Image: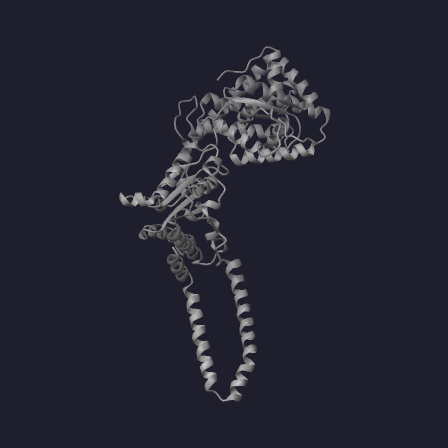
Length: 547
Protein backbone atom coordinates (compact mmCIF):
# COMPACT_ATOMS: atom_id res chain seq x y z
CA UNK A 1 0.00 0.00 0.00
CA UNK A 2 2.84 2.42 0.91
CA UNK A 3 4.66 1.65 -2.35
CA UNK A 4 1.45 2.30 -4.28
CA UNK A 5 1.02 5.67 -2.58
CA UNK A 6 4.65 6.62 -3.34
CA UNK A 7 4.17 5.54 -6.94
CA UNK A 8 0.95 7.52 -7.29
CA UNK A 9 2.58 10.56 -5.66
CA UNK A 10 5.44 10.35 -8.17
CA UNK A 11 3.09 9.93 -11.14
CA UNK A 12 0.96 12.86 -10.02
CA UNK A 13 3.93 15.14 -9.25
CA UNK A 14 6.56 14.21 -11.87
CA UNK A 15 6.98 17.89 -12.78
CA UNK A 16 7.79 18.91 -9.20
CA UNK A 17 10.16 15.98 -8.74
CA UNK A 18 12.10 17.20 -11.78
CA UNK A 19 12.01 20.81 -10.55
CA UNK A 20 13.41 19.82 -7.14
CA UNK A 21 16.09 17.67 -8.77
CA UNK A 22 17.14 20.51 -11.09
CA UNK A 23 17.26 22.95 -8.17
CA UNK A 24 19.45 20.59 -6.17
CA UNK A 25 21.83 20.07 -9.10
CA UNK A 26 22.02 23.82 -9.78
CA UNK A 27 22.63 24.48 -6.07
CA UNK A 28 25.48 22.00 -5.96
CA UNK A 29 27.01 23.44 -9.15
CA UNK A 30 26.69 26.97 -7.72
CA UNK A 31 28.50 26.01 -4.53
CA UNK A 32 31.24 24.29 -6.53
CA UNK A 33 31.55 27.34 -8.82
CA UNK A 34 31.79 29.75 -5.90
CA UNK A 35 34.50 27.61 -4.33
CA UNK A 36 36.72 28.07 -7.42
CA UNK A 37 36.06 31.81 -7.79
CA UNK A 38 38.27 34.61 -6.49
CA UNK A 39 37.23 35.55 -2.92
CA UNK A 40 36.18 39.12 -3.90
CA UNK A 41 33.88 37.99 -6.70
CA UNK A 42 32.59 35.14 -4.59
CA UNK A 43 31.64 37.53 -1.78
CA UNK A 44 30.04 39.89 -4.31
CA UNK A 45 27.87 37.09 -5.71
CA UNK A 46 26.86 35.93 -2.24
CA UNK A 47 25.96 39.53 -1.24
CA UNK A 48 23.57 40.09 -4.17
CA UNK A 49 22.11 36.56 -4.04
CA UNK A 50 19.30 37.42 -1.53
CA UNK A 51 18.23 40.43 -3.61
CA UNK A 52 18.20 38.42 -6.84
CA UNK A 53 16.27 35.64 -5.10
CA UNK A 54 13.70 38.15 -3.81
CA UNK A 55 13.29 39.65 -7.29
CA UNK A 56 12.74 36.22 -8.83
CA UNK A 57 10.21 35.29 -6.14
CA UNK A 58 8.25 38.52 -6.66
CA UNK A 59 8.30 38.04 -10.42
CA UNK A 60 7.20 34.41 -10.07
CA UNK A 61 4.37 35.24 -7.64
CA UNK A 62 3.11 38.05 -9.88
CA UNK A 63 3.13 35.79 -12.93
CA UNK A 64 1.43 33.01 -11.02
CA UNK A 65 -1.27 35.40 -9.75
CA UNK A 66 -2.20 36.60 -13.24
CA UNK A 67 -2.04 33.04 -14.58
CA UNK A 68 -4.44 31.83 -11.87
CA UNK A 69 -6.80 34.75 -12.53
CA UNK A 70 -6.97 33.80 -16.19
CA UNK A 71 -7.26 30.05 -15.63
CA UNK A 72 -9.66 29.93 -12.69
CA UNK A 73 -11.86 32.87 -13.57
CA UNK A 74 -11.42 32.62 -17.30
CA UNK A 75 -11.85 28.91 -17.63
CA UNK A 76 -8.80 26.72 -17.12
CA UNK A 77 -9.02 25.85 -13.43
CA UNK A 78 -10.92 23.00 -11.92
CA UNK A 79 -10.74 23.64 -8.20
CA UNK A 80 -13.56 21.27 -7.29
CA UNK A 81 -11.59 18.14 -8.15
CA UNK A 82 -8.47 18.83 -6.19
CA UNK A 83 -7.81 17.39 -2.76
CA UNK A 84 -10.81 19.30 -1.41
CA UNK A 85 -13.18 17.77 -3.98
CA UNK A 86 -12.63 14.18 -2.91
CA UNK A 87 -14.97 12.71 -0.30
CA UNK A 88 -14.28 9.36 1.27
CA UNK A 89 -17.22 6.98 1.18
CA UNK A 90 -17.13 6.35 4.90
CA UNK A 91 -17.33 10.11 5.54
CA UNK A 92 -20.62 10.44 3.65
CA UNK A 93 -23.41 10.27 6.21
CA UNK A 94 -26.03 9.00 3.77
CA UNK A 95 -27.13 5.36 3.73
CA UNK A 96 -29.74 3.48 1.77
CA UNK A 97 -31.99 3.69 4.85
CA UNK A 98 -31.95 7.48 4.48
CA UNK A 99 -33.15 7.23 0.88
CA UNK A 100 -36.92 7.12 1.38
CA UNK A 101 -39.03 5.58 -1.33
CA UNK A 102 -37.30 4.83 -4.65
CA UNK A 103 -37.58 1.10 -3.91
CA UNK A 104 -36.87 0.06 -7.49
CA UNK A 105 -33.99 2.51 -7.86
CA UNK A 106 -32.47 1.38 -4.55
CA UNK A 107 -32.67 -2.26 -5.60
CA UNK A 108 -30.75 -1.51 -8.80
CA UNK A 109 -28.22 0.62 -6.89
CA UNK A 110 -27.66 -2.10 -4.29
CA UNK A 111 -26.80 -4.50 -7.09
CA UNK A 112 -24.14 -2.11 -8.40
CA UNK A 113 -22.74 -1.69 -4.87
CA UNK A 114 -22.50 -5.45 -4.45
CA UNK A 115 -20.60 -5.65 -7.75
CA UNK A 116 -18.15 -3.01 -6.50
CA UNK A 117 -17.61 -4.87 -3.24
CA UNK A 118 -17.21 -8.24 -4.95
CA UNK A 119 -15.15 -6.97 -7.89
CA UNK A 120 -12.46 -9.63 -7.43
CA UNK A 121 -15.07 -12.38 -7.63
CA UNK A 122 -16.63 -10.72 -10.68
CA UNK A 123 -13.25 -10.63 -12.47
CA UNK A 124 -12.53 -14.28 -11.62
CA UNK A 125 -15.60 -15.46 -13.50
CA UNK A 126 -14.81 -13.17 -16.45
CA UNK A 127 -17.32 -10.41 -15.71
CA UNK A 128 -16.80 -6.68 -15.46
CA UNK A 129 -17.92 -4.16 -12.90
CA UNK A 130 -20.50 -1.71 -14.23
CA UNK A 131 -18.67 1.30 -15.66
CA UNK A 132 -21.58 3.63 -16.36
CA UNK A 133 -24.86 4.18 -14.51
CA UNK A 134 -27.39 6.78 -15.67
CA UNK A 135 -30.04 8.14 -13.30
CA UNK A 136 -32.98 9.76 -15.08
CA UNK A 137 -35.82 11.59 -13.40
CA UNK A 138 -37.37 14.93 -12.44
CA UNK A 139 -35.45 17.36 -10.21
CA UNK A 140 -35.58 17.04 -6.45
CA UNK A 141 -36.28 13.31 -6.41
CA UNK A 142 -33.01 12.13 -4.86
CA UNK A 143 -30.57 11.30 -7.65
CA UNK A 144 -27.59 12.93 -5.91
CA UNK A 145 -28.72 11.53 -2.56
CA UNK A 146 -28.86 8.01 -4.00
CA UNK A 147 -25.38 8.37 -5.54
CA UNK A 148 -23.97 9.45 -2.16
CA UNK A 149 -25.61 6.45 -0.50
CA UNK A 150 -23.97 4.18 -3.08
CA UNK A 151 -20.54 5.67 -2.32
CA UNK A 152 -21.09 5.25 1.43
CA UNK A 153 -22.28 1.65 1.15
CA UNK A 154 -19.40 0.77 -1.17
CA UNK A 155 -16.88 2.65 1.02
CA UNK A 156 -15.01 4.14 -1.94
CA UNK A 157 -13.89 7.72 -2.80
CA UNK A 158 -16.65 9.87 -4.28
CA UNK A 159 -16.18 12.79 -6.69
CA UNK A 160 -19.22 14.96 -7.38
CA UNK A 161 -19.00 17.21 -10.46
CA UNK A 162 -21.62 19.30 -12.29
CA UNK A 163 -21.79 19.08 -16.07
CA UNK A 164 -21.51 22.86 -16.34
CA UNK A 165 -18.04 22.72 -14.71
CA UNK A 166 -16.69 21.14 -17.90
CA UNK A 167 -18.02 23.90 -20.15
CA UNK A 168 -15.92 26.96 -20.99
CA UNK A 169 -15.38 29.35 -23.88
CA UNK A 170 -11.74 28.31 -24.24
CA UNK A 171 -11.23 25.46 -26.69
CA UNK A 172 -9.74 22.37 -25.07
CA UNK A 173 -10.51 23.36 -21.48
CA UNK A 174 -13.45 20.94 -21.14
CA UNK A 175 -11.39 18.04 -22.47
CA UNK A 176 -8.52 18.76 -20.10
CA UNK A 177 -10.91 18.86 -17.16
CA UNK A 178 -12.39 15.52 -18.12
CA UNK A 179 -8.90 14.00 -18.34
CA UNK A 180 -7.97 15.47 -14.97
CA UNK A 181 -10.98 14.18 -13.04
CA UNK A 182 -10.58 10.73 -14.54
CA UNK A 183 -6.87 10.68 -13.78
CA UNK A 184 -7.49 11.64 -10.15
CA UNK A 185 -10.32 9.12 -9.76
CA UNK A 186 -8.24 6.37 -11.42
CA UNK A 187 -5.36 6.97 -9.04
CA UNK A 188 -7.76 6.91 -6.08
CA UNK A 189 -9.27 3.68 -7.38
CA UNK A 190 -5.78 2.19 -7.75
CA UNK A 191 -5.23 2.74 -4.01
CA UNK A 192 -8.75 2.05 -2.69
CA UNK A 193 -9.86 -0.58 -5.17
CA UNK A 194 -12.62 1.57 -6.75
CA UNK A 195 -13.88 5.14 -7.03
CA UNK A 196 -17.11 6.83 -8.09
CA UNK A 197 -17.43 9.91 -10.30
CA UNK A 198 -20.87 11.52 -10.11
CA UNK A 199 -21.66 13.91 -12.99
CA UNK A 200 -24.80 15.91 -12.26
CA UNK A 201 -26.73 17.44 -15.18
CA UNK A 202 -24.97 15.15 -17.64
CA UNK A 203 -27.07 16.53 -20.50
CA UNK A 204 -24.97 19.74 -20.43
CA UNK A 205 -22.04 17.89 -22.02
CA UNK A 206 -23.85 14.75 -23.19
CA UNK A 207 -26.20 16.19 -25.81
CA UNK A 208 -25.99 14.81 -29.32
CA UNK A 209 -22.92 16.13 -31.12
CA UNK A 210 -23.36 18.84 -33.73
CA UNK A 211 -21.17 18.74 -36.82
CA UNK A 212 -21.89 22.19 -38.21
CA UNK A 213 -19.82 23.83 -40.92
CA UNK A 214 -17.41 26.37 -39.44
CA UNK A 215 -16.75 24.55 -36.18
CA UNK A 216 -20.05 25.18 -34.37
CA UNK A 217 -20.23 23.20 -31.16
CA UNK A 218 -16.55 22.25 -31.41
CA UNK A 219 -15.80 22.71 -27.71
CA UNK A 220 -18.85 20.72 -26.56
CA UNK A 221 -18.07 17.99 -29.07
CA UNK A 222 -14.47 17.69 -27.92
CA UNK A 223 -15.53 17.53 -24.26
CA UNK A 224 -18.01 14.74 -25.00
CA UNK A 225 -15.44 12.91 -27.15
CA UNK A 226 -12.95 13.05 -24.30
CA UNK A 227 -15.56 11.67 -21.88
CA UNK A 228 -16.26 8.78 -24.25
CA UNK A 229 -12.54 8.02 -24.60
CA UNK A 230 -11.94 8.13 -20.84
CA UNK A 231 -14.86 5.79 -20.18
CA UNK A 232 -13.48 3.37 -22.77
CA UNK A 233 -10.07 3.47 -21.11
CA UNK A 234 -11.29 2.56 -17.65
CA UNK A 235 -11.18 -1.18 -18.20
CA UNK A 236 -7.50 -1.30 -19.22
CA UNK A 237 -6.26 -1.24 -15.62
CA UNK A 238 -7.60 -4.20 -13.70
CA UNK A 239 -6.68 -2.56 -10.40
CA UNK A 240 -8.61 0.64 -11.03
CA UNK A 241 -12.41 0.34 -11.11
CA UNK A 242 -13.93 3.76 -11.76
CA UNK A 243 -17.71 3.84 -11.87
CA UNK A 244 -19.25 6.87 -13.54
CA UNK A 245 -22.74 7.83 -12.39
CA UNK A 246 -24.57 10.37 -14.51
CA UNK A 247 -27.76 12.19 -13.60
CA UNK A 248 -30.11 14.17 -15.80
CA UNK A 249 -33.58 15.73 -15.65
CA UNK A 250 -33.82 15.86 -19.42
CA UNK A 251 -35.32 13.35 -21.81
CA UNK A 252 -32.84 10.57 -22.47
CA UNK A 253 -33.45 10.98 -26.22
CA UNK A 254 -31.38 14.18 -26.31
CA UNK A 255 -28.23 12.36 -25.15
CA UNK A 256 -25.66 11.23 -27.70
CA UNK A 257 -26.19 7.57 -28.67
CA UNK A 258 -22.47 6.89 -28.09
CA UNK A 259 -22.99 7.63 -24.39
CA UNK A 260 -25.74 5.04 -24.09
CA UNK A 261 -24.12 2.14 -25.91
CA UNK A 262 -22.98 -0.98 -24.00
CA UNK A 263 -19.80 -0.35 -22.05
CA UNK A 264 -20.69 3.23 -21.18
CA UNK A 265 -23.98 4.39 -19.64
CA UNK A 266 -25.64 1.11 -20.48
CA UNK A 267 -27.45 0.68 -17.15
CA UNK A 268 -30.30 3.10 -16.46
CA UNK A 269 -32.14 3.84 -13.22
CA UNK A 270 -35.48 5.61 -13.53
CA UNK A 271 -36.10 7.94 -10.59
CA UNK A 272 -39.82 8.74 -10.28
CA UNK A 273 -41.95 11.00 -8.13
CA UNK A 274 -42.77 9.42 -4.74
CA UNK A 275 -46.00 7.47 -4.37
CA UNK A 276 -48.50 8.15 -1.59
CA UNK A 277 -46.79 5.67 0.77
CA UNK A 278 -43.40 7.24 -0.01
CA UNK A 279 -44.76 10.74 0.65
CA UNK A 280 -46.09 9.58 3.99
CA UNK A 281 -42.63 8.29 4.93
CA UNK A 282 -41.09 11.55 3.76
CA UNK A 283 -43.38 13.65 5.93
CA UNK A 284 -42.66 11.39 8.90
CA UNK A 285 -38.92 11.71 8.26
CA UNK A 286 -38.84 15.52 7.91
CA UNK A 287 -41.33 16.18 10.71
CA UNK A 288 -39.03 14.28 13.08
CA UNK A 289 -36.40 16.94 12.41
CA UNK A 290 -38.68 19.73 13.70
CA UNK A 291 -41.04 20.24 16.62
CA UNK A 292 -44.40 19.18 15.25
CA UNK A 293 -47.80 18.47 16.75
CA UNK A 294 -48.03 14.65 17.06
CA UNK A 295 -51.71 14.76 16.08
CA UNK A 296 -50.91 15.93 12.52
CA UNK A 297 -52.74 13.76 10.00
CA UNK A 298 -49.73 12.63 7.95
CA UNK A 299 -51.67 10.27 5.60
CA UNK A 300 -53.91 13.19 4.69
CA UNK A 301 -50.85 15.34 3.92
CA UNK A 302 -49.52 12.55 1.72
CA UNK A 303 -52.77 12.48 -0.25
CA UNK A 304 -52.71 16.25 -0.54
CA UNK A 305 -49.25 16.37 -2.11
CA UNK A 306 -49.68 14.28 -5.25
CA UNK A 307 -46.77 14.80 -7.69
CA UNK A 308 -44.66 16.54 -5.05
CA UNK A 309 -40.97 15.61 -4.99
CA UNK A 310 -38.96 14.88 -1.81
CA UNK A 311 -37.36 18.33 -2.17
CA UNK A 312 -40.83 19.90 -2.36
CA UNK A 313 -41.93 18.11 0.81
CA UNK A 314 -38.78 19.16 2.67
CA UNK A 315 -39.37 22.75 1.56
CA UNK A 316 -43.00 22.62 2.71
CA UNK A 317 -41.98 21.40 6.19
CA UNK A 318 -39.31 24.12 6.48
CA UNK A 319 -41.77 26.79 5.35
CA UNK A 320 -44.35 25.55 7.87
CA UNK A 321 -41.76 25.95 10.64
CA UNK A 322 -41.32 29.63 9.68
CA UNK A 323 -45.09 30.14 9.60
CA UNK A 324 -45.42 28.52 13.04
CA UNK A 325 -42.78 30.89 14.46
CA UNK A 326 -44.49 33.95 12.93
CA UNK A 327 -47.77 32.85 14.51
CA UNK A 328 -46.12 32.49 17.92
CA UNK A 329 -46.52 28.72 18.21
CA UNK A 330 -44.01 26.29 19.68
CA UNK A 331 -45.19 23.34 17.57
CA UNK A 332 -45.92 23.00 13.86
CA UNK A 333 -49.61 22.28 13.27
CA UNK A 334 -51.51 20.85 10.33
CA UNK A 335 -52.76 24.37 9.56
CA UNK A 336 -49.15 25.62 9.28
CA UNK A 337 -48.26 22.85 6.81
CA UNK A 338 -51.41 23.48 4.80
CA UNK A 339 -50.60 27.20 4.62
CA UNK A 340 -47.02 26.40 3.64
CA UNK A 341 -48.26 24.17 0.83
CA UNK A 342 -50.45 26.98 -0.48
CA UNK A 343 -47.63 29.50 -0.22
CA UNK A 344 -45.25 27.23 -2.16
CA UNK A 345 -47.81 26.41 -4.86
CA UNK A 346 -49.83 29.61 -5.12
CA UNK A 347 -47.58 32.31 -3.75
CA UNK A 348 -47.81 34.55 -0.70
CA UNK A 349 -51.06 36.27 0.18
CA UNK A 350 -51.06 39.81 -1.26
CA UNK A 351 -53.94 41.37 0.77
CA UNK A 352 -55.49 43.31 -2.10
CA UNK A 353 -58.42 45.49 -1.08
CA UNK A 354 -61.35 44.30 -3.22
CA UNK A 355 -64.69 46.05 -3.30
CA UNK A 356 -67.71 44.15 -1.97
CA UNK A 357 -68.97 43.66 -5.52
CA UNK A 358 -65.63 42.29 -6.71
CA UNK A 359 -65.36 40.00 -3.71
CA UNK A 360 -68.85 38.60 -4.34
CA UNK A 361 -68.08 38.04 -8.02
CA UNK A 362 -64.89 36.16 -7.12
CA UNK A 363 -66.85 34.06 -4.62
CA UNK A 364 -69.40 33.03 -7.27
CA UNK A 365 -66.59 32.33 -9.73
CA UNK A 366 -64.73 30.03 -7.31
CA UNK A 367 -67.93 28.39 -6.07
CA UNK A 368 -68.68 27.40 -9.66
CA UNK A 369 -65.29 25.69 -9.96
CA UNK A 370 -65.85 24.01 -6.59
CA UNK A 371 -69.28 22.51 -7.35
CA UNK A 372 -68.35 21.18 -10.79
CA UNK A 373 -65.08 19.75 -9.51
CA UNK A 374 -66.64 18.04 -6.49
CA UNK A 375 -69.69 16.61 -8.22
CA UNK A 376 -68.58 16.25 -11.85
CA UNK A 377 -64.86 15.35 -11.83
CA UNK A 378 -64.10 11.59 -11.66
CA UNK A 379 -60.53 11.75 -10.31
CA UNK A 380 -59.80 15.04 -8.50
CA UNK A 381 -60.57 16.20 -4.95
CA UNK A 382 -61.13 19.78 -3.77
CA UNK A 383 -58.60 20.43 -1.01
CA UNK A 384 -59.28 24.14 -0.57
CA UNK A 385 -61.38 26.96 -1.97
CA UNK A 386 -60.22 30.50 -1.30
CA UNK A 387 -61.05 34.07 -2.24
CA UNK A 388 -57.84 35.40 -0.70
CA UNK A 389 -55.60 37.12 -3.23
CA UNK A 390 -52.37 35.21 -3.87
CA UNK A 391 -49.69 35.75 -6.51
CA UNK A 392 -51.91 37.91 -8.71
CA UNK A 393 -54.92 35.54 -8.51
CA UNK A 394 -58.06 36.89 -6.83
CA UNK A 395 -59.18 33.41 -5.81
CA UNK A 396 -58.44 29.75 -6.30
CA UNK A 397 -59.89 26.28 -5.99
CA UNK A 398 -56.98 24.08 -5.02
CA UNK A 399 -57.35 20.48 -6.19
CA UNK A 400 -55.31 17.37 -6.82
CA UNK A 401 -55.91 13.86 -8.12
CA UNK A 402 -56.90 11.44 -5.35
CA UNK A 403 -54.01 9.21 -6.40
CA UNK A 404 -51.20 9.07 -8.96
CA UNK A 405 -52.63 8.53 -12.43
CA UNK A 406 -50.25 8.04 -15.34
CA UNK A 407 -52.84 8.13 -18.14
CA UNK A 408 -55.97 10.20 -18.65
CA UNK A 409 -59.22 9.14 -20.30
CA UNK A 410 -61.47 11.31 -22.45
CA UNK A 411 -63.92 11.63 -19.54
CA UNK A 412 -61.18 12.99 -17.26
CA UNK A 413 -59.96 15.50 -19.82
CA UNK A 414 -63.52 16.61 -20.59
CA UNK A 415 -64.09 17.04 -16.84
CA UNK A 416 -61.01 19.29 -16.77
CA UNK A 417 -62.56 21.43 -19.50
CA UNK A 418 -65.85 21.65 -17.63
CA UNK A 419 -64.10 22.56 -14.38
CA UNK A 420 -62.10 25.30 -16.09
CA UNK A 421 -65.22 26.83 -17.65
CA UNK A 422 -67.34 26.62 -14.47
CA UNK A 423 -66.20 30.01 -13.16
CA UNK A 424 -67.10 31.71 -16.45
CA UNK A 425 -70.52 30.03 -16.52
CA UNK A 426 -71.35 30.89 -12.90
CA UNK A 427 -70.53 34.57 -13.52
CA UNK A 428 -72.69 34.53 -16.64
CA UNK A 429 -75.65 33.00 -14.79
CA UNK A 430 -75.43 35.35 -11.82
CA UNK A 431 -74.57 38.65 -13.52
CA UNK A 432 -75.43 37.98 -17.17
CA UNK A 433 -71.98 39.39 -17.95
CA UNK A 434 -68.46 38.03 -17.39
CA UNK A 435 -65.17 39.59 -16.30
CA UNK A 436 -61.50 39.48 -17.29
CA UNK A 437 -60.93 36.96 -14.51
CA UNK A 438 -61.90 34.17 -16.92
CA UNK A 439 -58.83 34.59 -19.19
CA UNK A 440 -56.70 31.99 -17.39
CA UNK A 441 -59.61 29.55 -17.30
CA UNK A 442 -60.17 29.96 -21.05
CA UNK A 443 -56.49 29.33 -21.76
CA UNK A 444 -56.62 26.14 -19.69
CA UNK A 445 -59.86 24.89 -21.24
CA UNK A 446 -58.76 25.58 -24.81
CA UNK A 447 -55.38 23.93 -24.24
CA UNK A 448 -57.02 20.72 -22.98
CA UNK A 449 -59.69 20.70 -25.71
CA UNK A 450 -57.07 21.28 -28.43
CA UNK A 451 -54.95 18.41 -27.10
CA UNK A 452 -58.00 16.14 -27.10
CA UNK A 453 -58.63 16.85 -30.79
CA UNK A 454 -55.17 17.45 -32.24
CA UNK A 455 -53.08 15.03 -30.14
CA UNK A 456 -55.22 12.23 -28.75
CA UNK A 457 -57.87 11.53 -31.41
CA UNK A 458 -60.71 12.21 -28.94
CA UNK A 459 -62.94 14.14 -31.33
CA UNK A 460 -66.45 13.02 -32.20
CA UNK A 461 -66.17 13.72 -35.94
CA UNK A 462 -64.21 10.57 -36.79
CA UNK A 463 -60.76 12.13 -37.19
CA UNK A 464 -58.28 9.81 -35.47
CA UNK A 465 -54.56 10.50 -35.05
CA UNK A 466 -51.99 13.01 -33.83
CA UNK A 467 -52.35 15.81 -36.33
CA UNK A 468 -49.54 17.89 -34.84
CA UNK A 469 -47.18 15.44 -36.57
CA UNK A 470 -48.35 16.87 -39.90
CA UNK A 471 -47.71 20.51 -39.05
CA UNK A 472 -43.93 20.39 -39.41
CA UNK A 473 -42.31 23.81 -39.71
CA UNK A 474 -45.08 26.06 -41.00
CA UNK A 475 -42.65 28.96 -41.67
CA UNK A 476 -40.65 26.75 -44.03
CA UNK A 477 -43.77 25.48 -45.74
CA UNK A 478 -43.37 21.95 -44.38
CA UNK A 479 -46.97 21.60 -43.18
CA UNK A 480 -48.67 18.50 -44.62
CA UNK A 481 -52.17 19.27 -43.36
CA UNK A 482 -54.71 21.13 -45.45
CA UNK A 483 -56.46 24.29 -44.35
CA UNK A 484 -59.83 22.56 -44.56
CA UNK A 485 -58.61 19.83 -42.18
CA UNK A 486 -57.39 22.53 -39.77
CA UNK A 487 -60.83 24.13 -39.92
CA UNK A 488 -62.50 20.79 -39.17
CA UNK A 489 -60.24 20.16 -36.18
CA UNK A 490 -60.62 23.67 -34.80
CA UNK A 491 -64.38 23.42 -35.24
CA UNK A 492 -64.31 20.22 -33.18
CA UNK A 493 -62.37 22.06 -30.44
CA UNK A 494 -65.15 24.64 -30.32
CA UNK A 495 -67.73 21.85 -30.26
CA UNK A 496 -66.12 20.41 -27.13
CA UNK A 497 -66.00 23.84 -25.47
CA UNK A 498 -69.65 24.58 -26.31
CA UNK A 499 -70.81 21.18 -25.11
CA UNK A 500 -68.89 21.59 -21.86
CA UNK A 501 -70.38 25.07 -21.36
CA UNK A 502 -73.92 23.79 -21.91
CA UNK A 503 -73.49 20.87 -19.50
CA UNK A 504 -71.94 23.08 -16.82
CA UNK A 505 -74.69 25.67 -17.17
CA UNK A 506 -77.41 23.04 -16.84
CA UNK A 507 -75.72 21.54 -13.80
CA UNK A 508 -75.10 24.85 -12.01
CA UNK A 509 -78.67 26.06 -12.58
CA UNK A 510 -79.96 22.84 -11.02
CA UNK A 511 -77.59 23.27 -8.07
CA UNK A 512 -77.85 27.03 -7.62
CA UNK A 513 -79.01 26.66 -4.01
CA UNK A 514 -75.66 25.02 -3.20
CA UNK A 515 -73.91 27.84 -5.06
CA UNK A 516 -75.46 30.38 -2.69
CA UNK A 517 -74.48 28.25 0.30
CA UNK A 518 -70.83 28.15 -0.70
CA UNK A 519 -70.73 31.80 -1.73
CA UNK A 520 -72.02 32.76 1.71
CA UNK A 521 -69.44 30.51 3.40
CA UNK A 522 -66.59 31.93 1.30
CA UNK A 523 -67.60 35.54 2.00
CA UNK A 524 -67.69 34.78 5.72
CA UNK A 525 -64.49 32.74 6.06
CA UNK A 526 -62.51 33.66 2.88
CA UNK A 527 -61.22 30.06 2.79
CA UNK A 528 -62.79 26.62 3.01
CA UNK A 529 -60.67 23.57 3.70
CA UNK A 530 -61.41 20.02 2.56
CA UNK A 531 -63.19 19.03 5.79
CA UNK A 532 -65.39 22.12 5.72
CA UNK A 533 -66.31 21.56 2.06
CA UNK A 534 -67.08 17.91 2.73
CA UNK A 535 -69.21 18.80 5.76
CA UNK A 536 -71.30 21.34 3.82
CA UNK A 537 -72.03 18.85 1.05
CA UNK A 538 -72.98 16.12 3.52
CA UNK A 539 -75.18 18.54 5.45
CA UNK A 540 -77.18 19.14 2.28
CA UNK A 541 -77.22 15.48 1.22
CA UNK A 542 -74.83 15.84 -1.70
CA UNK A 543 -72.28 13.14 -2.55
CA UNK A 544 -69.02 13.30 -4.42
CA UNK A 545 -68.94 11.68 -7.85
CA UNK A 546 -67.54 8.15 -7.87
CA UNK A 547 -64.67 7.39 -10.25
